[in-house]
Length: 140
Image (cartoon, rainbow, N blue to C red; front, top):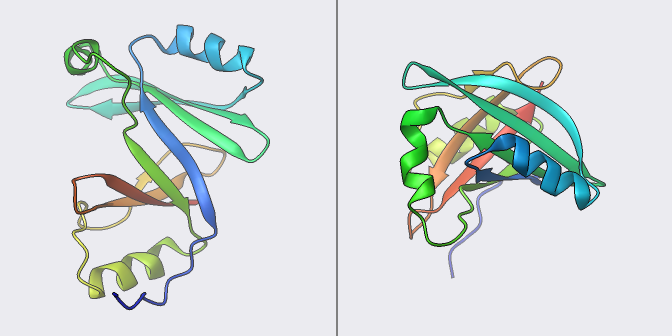
C-alpha cells in the first residue's frame, strides 16, 4: 500500500464537462436546480471558448464549450465524457510544490491563472494511472 503524501484537499470543487452547446447545457442543468454562478470566456488555440459554473448546494458542474475547432472531437463521441475532477485547495502554490516533490505527473509547469470567479482562480492538473485528469484549484 502506498504511503499518502501530506496534502490538504478540502473537497471536490467541480466536475468539468465539455459541451457542444453551452446554452442548451445551461438550460438542462437549470432544470435540475443548478444556478449559473460564474460565466467567463477563455482562450484555446487562439480562439475563444466559454466556461460556465453551474451550482446546486455544494455541487458545481463546469460546463465548457471549446471554440469551433475543438468541437469535432466532442461531437464525434458516442457517449458523454467527464473531462476532469477538480479538488478545492487553500494554497495552490504549496499544493503544487508538494505534488511536484512527490513525483506525480504534473501537466502544467506552474499553477495557471484564469479570470474566473470574482478575483480569478489558479489551477494545475496531474494525470492518473489511466490518463484521467485531476485538477487542483484555488479560487482567489
